[in-house]
Image (tube, rainbow, N blue to C red; front, top):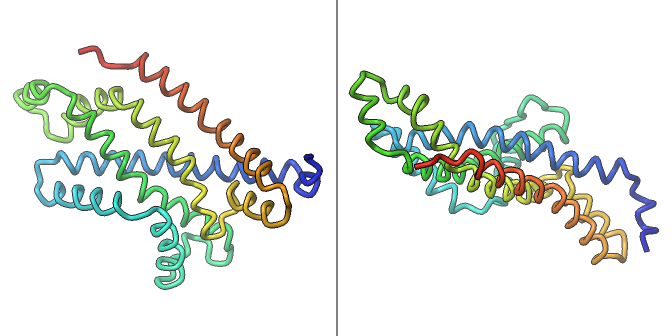
Length: 225
């Protein structure tokens, strides 16, 4: 039943999932950084920053991820000549553009998760911090964000799981991750259901432990009010 796998050795299968893991990790780090900055903008006392953060989140969340990923390739790379530091390496350029697109999209959801956590912090704490002379950035960095992150580990875990599954869209611009290999195997073999089950199991292996671990952390680090 598994004879067709002999044409796709283990390094090929593992390599495809390793690319998926790399996409997920790099995009998660970038999304957390950019999403945190967007959340800070959304609660900023500066109207221009608040308007930019709000507009970015509302626009990006309503654009399909496939459109964003394809735009990074056809728009940024082919039209504007953005090479992401790899002008002659198609695979590296496609990978970096995919990370850029995933960060741009996922950060909007990270922003909203963190903003919901910020809203759980009692207003009195910020007012007390202002009373002793702390600036907005100091209040956010020292008082609000540490509590906000502890409050939203669960929601951020859901965003990370969604990001892991969304990496499959990178196949649209030729990134050699798991979904692209699955498509190639389905086109070449007559084992569609079995191949789909194998790759589905691979994604369960990637996402289930993440949800369980972060769910446990969420309970352990929850802020007691």
